[in-house]
Amino acid sequence: MIYYEASNEVLKKTEQRPEHGGICVCMPDELRRQEPQRFAPHTVDECEKSGPSKLEAYDGYDFIALNVIRDPEGFQMQKMGLYLTPATVYFVCAQPCQAVSKVIATFQETKTPKLSPVKVVYSFFNHLTAGDSEKLENLEDEISDIEEHILEGVEKDYILDIVRMRKRLMFYKKYYEQLLDVAESIEENVNGLLSSGALRSFRMFTARVERLNRNLTNLRDYITQVREAYQSQVDIGLNQIMKLFTVITAIFLPLTLLVGWYGMNFRYMPELQWRYGYFCVIVVSAAVVAFCIVYFKKKKML
Image 1: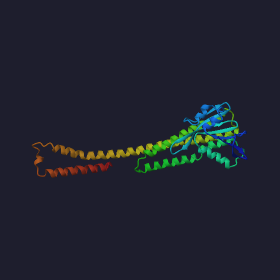
Image 2 (image 1 turned 120 degrees about the vertical axis):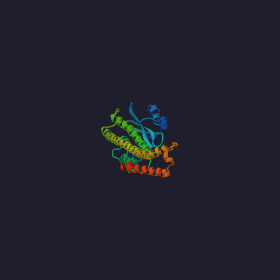
Image 3 (image 1 turned 90 degrees about the horizontal axis):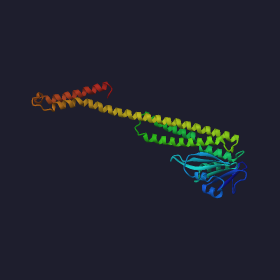
Image 4 (image 1 turned 90 degrees about the vertical axis):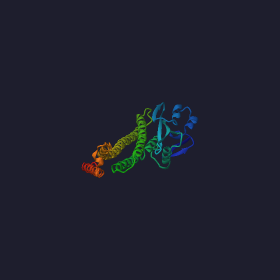
């Protein structure tokens, strides 16, 4: 277990738990060994088991089970736990968490007036959505590029791109919804661990997550419209092909009738013995084809 205390407006590592409040970063096994009776055992288990994000209020502390994005490209999340007590905040991670490390490092290097464990927690939650507005803008640009290529008629199968984009949006939507549930539960402040100033800060965070979630919902609607536009383009292409086949069938249908008529080989068909019969059939067939082509072009079907 690693302890940090606020000293001269920065976080400093210490050997023992600070008496007047601080930060503790540990693994579930370390928390079980060193402070076995301090927290409910099943909450420690939840720090390393998969499940939804949530906040539970206990006697003297709040427990937050949180899913943190570990690999956005691989759609992977990391489970961790936070224990909010009147004096100390515990970050419990089964695996190293970059978000926790970056926040701790920031407060170690930068002086912060009136530094407190609650400020560290608020900064940690802010870090979870840092740069997400730019990420959503980039996703919107990618969707817009797909839409432009579809409308320009670029020949490519965009289904995989659209499905991949929808999967990314669903991943972020699930993340924001769980984060929003936790933020709203923090605002309730059941144990009274947060001051009025801290509650105002978390209300700002909740509003930010709500905006991100609304933007994400708009992007989901956008990609759905793009998928429908692509499907329409595919249907139009299929209709063009079917129209071409229909026209070809219509052109050769009279020729098929002609061939069937003279293929009956009746004994007294006068054209069979006519010297110019073969030449006449060629001329009639060519005339029928030419007439059909001119007619279909005039009707803009070719």
